[in-house]
Picture: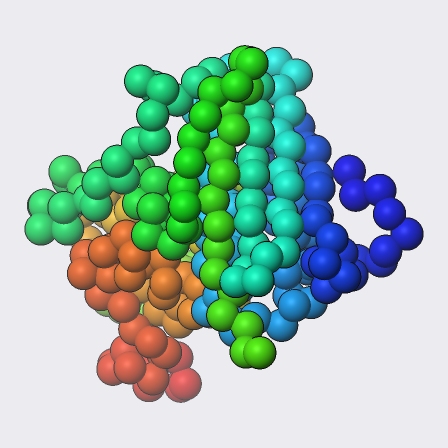
Length: 157
Length: 115
């Protein structure tokens, strides 16, 4: 958890990383996102960039809850978000199952020309992550999934 | 999940009275849509005006609702926030759904709602 005397929204602004550890649970993800977005908002990036941050983090965390940790008990997710010159460097770690094949999924776009009954209801997550995050890297280290990526904040100098 | 349906002769407007359709409520959303769509008109418009954010699970639940209504009935989207629009565009679902930027663009409906 964030251990600091810095108030909400003050960590990234002070050049410090935000660190959170949450249980693998959709409501905990929702709360963590609210907390992270409060910090990122304090950097005053453009609205579209804020949307990018929230979408990418939501998809990364949801993938962990729904796939890596699904059906496993007592799983934790650690999130570290550090400010950089261009934006944010993020690392998300979990002790769930490794990604299938030990590699990042491709994130193929769904085929919108398909007829309604055949339209996919899922598979959007990696498409969004790949479309919005940079420097995406996945490693399996000592029984942990470690996903790192960077996000541009486009903050005017 | 707070969803409210309003049906006129040929159109049902379902208003989402929540700020998020995300992984934490996607199942509840789908269940509530199933209930409300039982008595829905041929044209169903999902009013997203109060929704700030959807994630891929929320989007999947909306796509599932559209499939549930097809082929007799259609699901259209109205009033997407900038974040929702971004998710629809990046997943190319903006080419699957009819999207009304605001209710004024839903022609016969706008006058009916105003009346």
